[in-house]
Image (cartoon, rainbow, N blue to C red; front, side):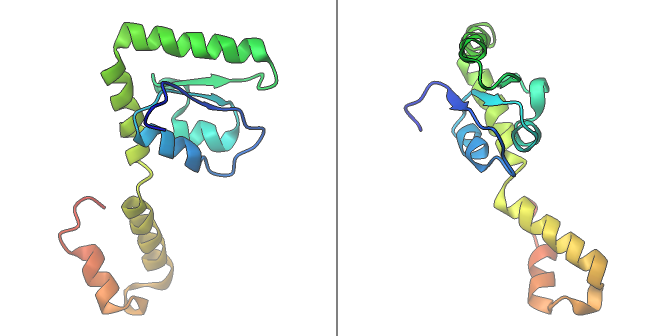
Length: 129
């Protein structure tokens, strides 16, 4: 994936767009089907490194999306586009996901149900969580 210039994700359905997160983590701009799982992960059209394709079965719409990404790369610069992609991918890190599960578990079960080692881990200096 590090040799690619653009990632295309022509999907009819996505529960969670892990492949999109992987692509964004490498800094790729992405053209993807406008489906719920991808739209949420990619940040929608507000993310300059993304173009969503509404008519996913239309080859002309994919050509348009690719041209749009090329234009964005030229106008905003490759490094800026790559940074937008990487910033979006960081929202879905394993650490953030684990912290989210911990917080939900803590909220539902209460402090007394959490093992001390787990509590200490999440309350320690893990500022990146």
